[in-house]
Image (cartoon, rainbow, N blue to C red):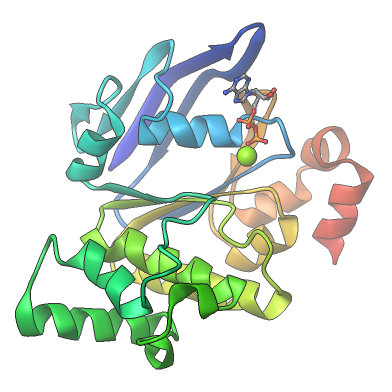
Length: 242
Ligand SMILES: Nc1ncnc2c1ncn2[C@@H]1O[C@H](COP(=O)(O)OP(=O)(O)O)[C@@H](O)[C@H]1O
Ligand SMILES: [Mg+2]
């Protein structure tokens, strides 16, 4: 196991946002967590990044307990995230944005090559000298993704990576996540959009009221009547069938 959580618990006032969750992800694995608004997905995400501290429970990463570590220490150990609000600097060029993250790990020709390779991977090679603010919404998201994987993390956390994207951009993001997964980086995608989850087609955990409601392969989830009836509602089922 790369990361596992044991009895992770977090309460905000009277609301239990993460209720004794047990969950794990292996090295190089891609997984998805879904659930409607308020299910506790972002809370779980922020418990992993260290933005929120758990009330109790443990987070074990590469064999060590990281539950009490601040965000930067978790990042140094190999957990990267792309925040929902982008970490991209709009006034800087695409190349400069990439350089800011990659220059911590390399320099000179290696740095230039790495920037070019990463941007080619993201279909952003042609935007090298443009300011990030000139990019489309989808392109900016991909640049943010490229910056998040700049440090070659062991685990990449993505909270709703396709929010605001067109269908075509969403498909490209799915392809990109599959390519990142193929490089050996474990990826956790937190998402409420069923269509996206269906395209991604990876082991999926359904959150409901801070708890794990169901988990399994995408087809397990799709055929789970409890998920359809009690959790996704009519709209969710309709989305699944689309
Ligand atoms: N910082 C916070 N302060 C108070 N309540 C919060 C906070 N963050 C989340 N919550 C509450 O915790 C529950 C889970 O929220 P969240 O994790 O954002 O769900 P999701 O990402 O699945 O929509 C909700 O009831 C939400 O109102
Ligand atoms: Mg959320």
